[in-house]
Amino acid sequence: MRLLRNKLVHEYADDTMQLLEHLLLAKEFSFELNQSFTNLKHILEKS
Image (cartoon, rainbow, N blue to C red; front, side):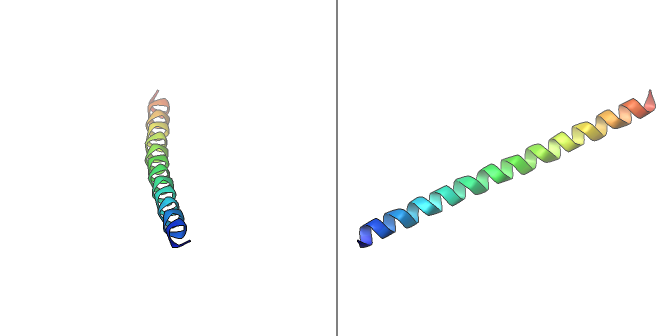
C-alpha cells in the first residue's frame, strides 16, 4: 500500500512539473506573439 502511495505521489509530482513547464512555454509564446502584434501595429501605423 505504501509503495503504491509513493508511486502515485511521484506520478502526481511529475505531472505537475510537466504542467508547469507547459504553462511556462505558453507564457513565453504568448509574450512573443504579443510582441509580434505590437511590432506589426507600429509598422502599420508608420505606413
